[in-house]
Image 1 (tube, one colour):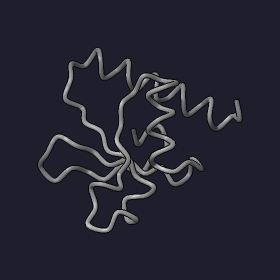
Image 2 (cartoon, one colour):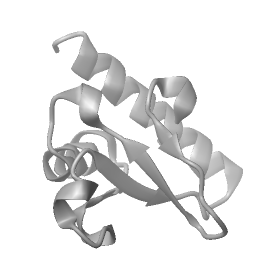
Image 3 (spheres, rainbow, N blue to C red):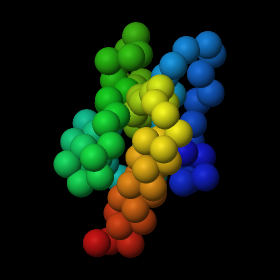
Image 4 (cartoon, rainbow, N blue to C red):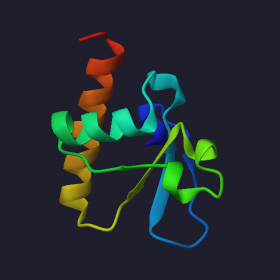
Length: 89
């Protein structure tokens, strides 16, 4: 995810990763919906995972608990989505 230009918070012993979305111009909720609809990639808005929900805005949460083939395909779809979004398509 870092290679795709997202800020990533390294997990401290768990299955979940937080990725920063501030540079995409979408709220965490908007991005979560667009990713599932357009790329088939499931993430959750970061807001429910912070003591102060507003601190989770600009973050999405996901997990990488799957086989490497599925993970690779999801990251490819995420990359395509980001390329399309940044190019204004």
